[in-house]
Image (cartoon, rainbow, N blue to C red; front, side, top):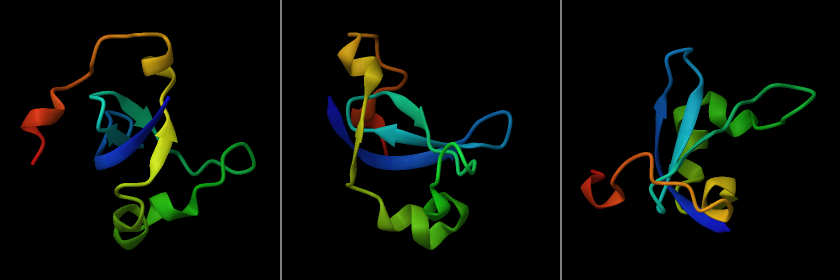
Length: 73
């Protein structure tokens, strides 16, 4: 299920994680050649993707939320 990005944070390994409107988190690594997401490497790039939709596999699996999106700043 496609869900819009509402924010980002870094995990304990310093990798970027997208916060989705559904309340799930999803890693958005730039890890060539497996995943090409150069937009994750700059603040401007990440900001440009706010509102863009990612496929949320956690929604597809009906998993519980990782955070409460209504409390997002």
